[in-house]
Length: 352
Ligand code: F0G
Image 1 (cartoon, protein in one colour):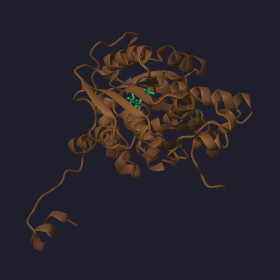
Image 2: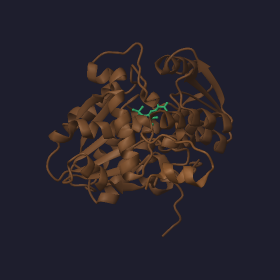
Image 3: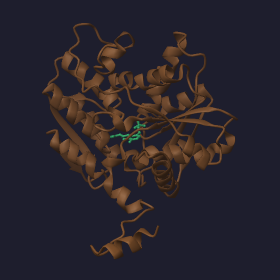
């Protein structure tokens, strides 16, 4: 088998690239699809086949690498030497990494105080110019849209169509791994680019006869930021899942189209349920995904009685839990216990 060299090389016939395109890659994609029988049992639905698509194993630890390899590759191909994005953290980490790899300047705007520590460290280490604004993601996105219209810098948020092209390859990998599409596709919804991308990917391969059916798209938002569910822009979005703390999703209509065409749903879950799911996933499956990713697990739990018997579910775990150590330590059900270095004290605590 040929060495894996990233998703553009793997799926080039389905992507807008030519042999001359200068591929900027960190060997992203090819992420594991992990069967989660313990989770199915824990939620009282052991008839379900639940598969977790662990996007946290991408090079910068989130699904954003799929879109960013394409967006930065095309930016370079088109002669751009600077990229910009607004971000709740993961996009900025990915843009900064691919920007570094490509040797182009990277500018990121983030909501001050609402980005997980790991993500901020990444953007800083990869050498991006990081600007923290006293506003939320939606305001940062408005600013970068305006800036990229007026200055020579390429916007790499998911409004950039190449981001969607790269991200749709996640659907291809799922179809290859399951040898068909699943019955349900659970995915967190923030700015709504990823649900748009997966739906595009599934439809494209369905049209090519590579799968026999299409999944129901099950988008999950955080209650305090659930603009699509509540059918209104949220001026001051709130949630502990900072990655999806977004009140006016850029791909709102596309997400609704994915939901409606697939006869799926977009629902919401509370922070409390997200934290429960975060702990349950880690402690039953050995998978630490960041809180926004765990909104999907909370969504499965919320909707479990509506899912048909023996169904196959794929749940996209969008980001690595190591990105957000503060949340892990704050919300972990198993706290650190302290004692002296005396063996008897240690053994006492072990409580065998
Ligand atoms: N999960 C994680 C871990 C994310 O970082 C994001 C989005 C989403 C889910 C939602 O995906 O926006 O395509 O609906 N993060 C963006 C960012 C907004 O800036 O990193 P979406």
